Image (cartoon, rainbow, N blue to C red; front, side, top):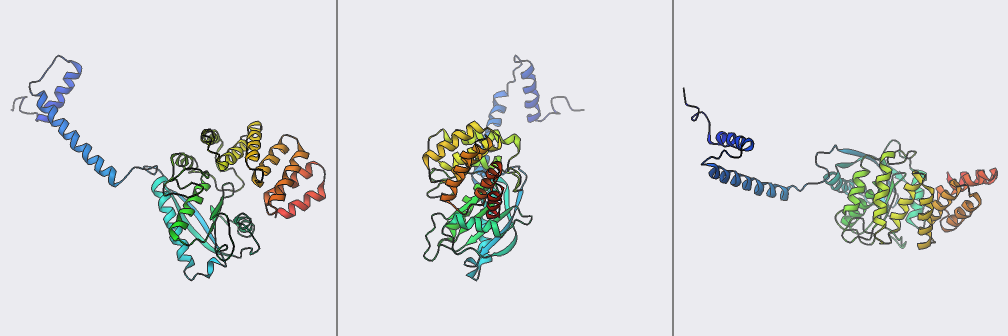
Length: 356
């Protein structure tokens, strides 16, 4: 039989001595320094290899996360469909945006179906076209409706390249000269579906003036929080347990004083869902003070006034908003509710009809 000394390899002896040293620091081995050198060299090689692998495959929010698939119904208007390869183009754009979200957040976009949308040629803004899209194209079981239009290409000067509705998960994107720019704008609008706001953040995909190539830290936090959002238009996107977290993120961002109206707008919407009407009132006053021509801000002010029993003031706010944006279904609906509260049923019914 071999002696006890011969039955252990050098590595086993080192491990045993380490255990002994741990329990009794006074036990010292003569070859301890030699084995420590071996261990340090091994650790150094491992660290170098790890750095190399991280350079090739950077970590992202998608690591070890369950993949979420978001189904999309693509609605192309007659102008966009005039391109012979319009379906292939739509597939390319959505595929590239999907790759971005899958890599960073483990979210992928899947085209469920293509449909034809006969857009309103009398619309003079992307905002009006969005409401035309919502009115004519239903979700039909899909999570998101993605509208594609080429209006604005020939003589029409639309202010924005894209627009998205967080609460009812509808996106509208306008044809742009560069396909790479169009894909960047698509990723920007998809970001809105997951709670992102328009920012003054150079280099960020959510920059309001010139979207960059990557999502900023603030936006990444919002998208992660909204990853499992509900796409049912009759349910608020986030669960009750996440409302405070989202509001805290918006509030912290707003405290930077960057005058990002989109952040304040979303904060007001979350205060409404949380039934924090005093905070919502403050946000609405701030929004209207900065931009008195915002129909969305007046609509939110009308809601909080009605919720707090100030019906006449609510009606006045809705009327201000309608003077700024007549084609706003939610405004007609909300005004109808306020008129019902005043007992003006015929006028209320008229507003409800306008909302349909």
